[in-house]
Amino acid sequence: MGFPTAKAQVFIDIESGLVFGGYNDVRIPGDGGTRFSLTDDLKSENEWFYRLRGGFTFNKRHTISLLYAPLTVKSDGSIDRPIEFSGTTFPSNTPLNGTYKFNSYRLTYRYDFVHKTKTEFGLGVTAKIRDAKIDLSSQGLAAEKENFGVVPLINFRLALNGEKLGFLLEGDALAAPQGRAEDVLAALTFKLSDKITWKLGYRILEGGADNDEVYTFAMFHYASTGFIIDL
Image 1 (tube, helix red, strand yellow):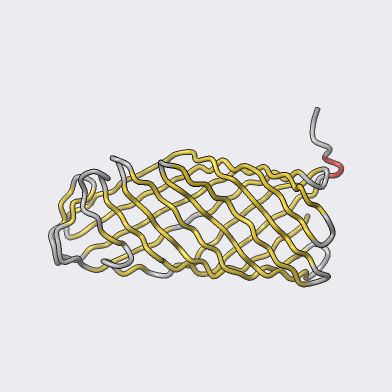
Image 2 (cartoon, one colour):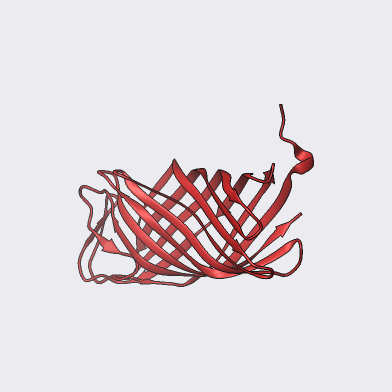
């Protein structure tokens, strides 16, 4: 039996803005490298970002969506101590360039337990594919650590809808002994038409892992704006 496509509502969610680094602590390998910060020991640049989500809602309460959320942040500077990173020793007080990449691909299913004109609330599950890399380079030396894996997350969404103005709280999050991940948006929404909603808000992305292979915990702050378009 297929989905009742005649009742399905297709949507596109486009988001962009500036991302600012909070903390970004790294030790690779996790049981033997030097712990350093890509935002405190080095200077992290603010970056433009974008995120794209597409999906559909059927029977009013069931939503399936796909998200593409790339993130690359660069850092530079020098550190007054030697850095052991991914099998390479970087001498103290030499110019360093670092790159933190954390691209995310997510498949989400959510069910709206509350679906009213002014209030919507749903919970679901997200399968996140993590495509991550941290690299460090300096004067002929270079090292990197790549990480690719699938992480399960809990998805949630709360929408409070006025005639024009509304509030949106949504995200994916989960904590476990192996690590944690949170990606949450709080935004004001403004209905421009029956099919286009503008949103403006703040997003936080935080998480990491601590094991023998890697120690990495990072937080990023997003000044975000975008459009939700019903097709």
